[in-house]
Length: 107
Image 1: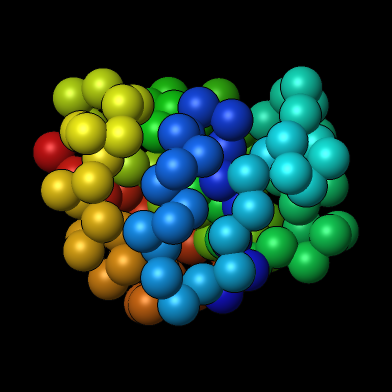
Image 2: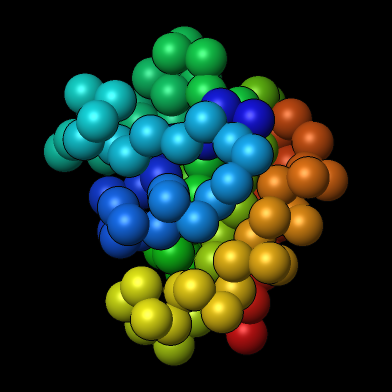
């Protein structure tokens, strides 16, 4: 899966998301974009998935009709140390999430 990591996700996490082509929002040239515009641009750029730790994401965005799969990670903080234990669950979610689906992983 071609996966875009939100700006609130530590960039080091992409090293642990094996089997997927990961880019951070800044690497994709999309830094500073608001979430709605960001998702549209990510879809246009061919990203199939979006990974974020933004807990309110599903309430802030209209996700109807989206092609991109969205995975929200719930962790104590967005620090890499709190996210690493969730990597197996993240990978499992990425293996099964379908286009346009919204999935939560973690606590």
